[in-house]
Length: 368
Image 1 (cartoon, rainbow, N blue to C red):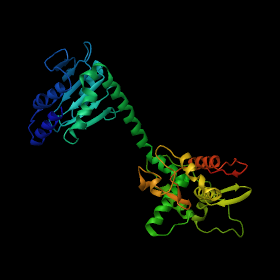
Image 2: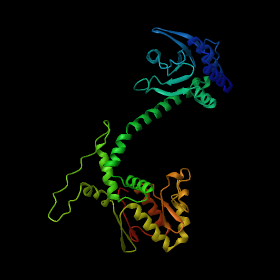
Image 3: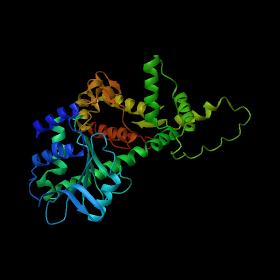
Image 4: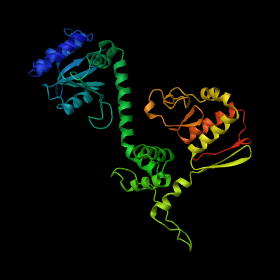
């Protein structure tokens, strides 16, 4: 199969397939043979399969007397043509899988899917743009005779269609996700923007200024994005109140995220949940530094170390994404996490250091 694909790729580059017949006989038929189909057996493959409304170039029969796969062949460079005709054939015959190809491009469709023809395409393979092994894998996945016969090809096509539909839905919601993060002035987003500004300039902007900047992005809403809830009007300024600029009101978004915690009866105030996490871990580490290896092991996840001896060890798979703070000499905690995860770390620390919540440590992080 690999040798066949490489030979076809070379001939495609040479422009050897001049028409649909050349594509059918020189590409489609040899590939089907390599996938286990007996191209001479009319019980398996019927070329020019006749239908009430026309005919399709190839009909593949897996089991029984009804076709399992339709393949429509086009001249090289004209793979986008023929979708409507192919789908009409498939719908009337109840065929579960359709293939449209010009030899170079192979598009696999699920006729029973929802939406446009493009939405119902489960995979598009460019034969001369993928490694031969990848081409073999995809062609086998959807067209191998044994997989068509046992229905696994159709099950995978349905699974791939659902995944593709889910991806489209997720992508369609990206503008809304961004606008809601901006509208909420999410703490993690504020910290990421602040850290990046510091990396570029060498100076860390005030968190209130970052929150104010994010609020200005609310007006840059894409046309298809859902508008965030309107900001309640500010109360009139009383005598002696510092009205200042519009940024002053927006800065309260950060002030509202300040954290107060009580450790062994002493109250502490922090500007953000990140600061609170670092300070709590630092105070616990100072009491018993020998328990830090146990804490690191307790908060470890399959992908993150969370607490490590080096910032680059926080996220071994993507060290470039690590954002960490040193809370004890030679010990770092990752900060690219949600407040819920920060609270989980604090609970684990209490268990390792044998503290009781809330008797010894009373803390509540925003949105955790």
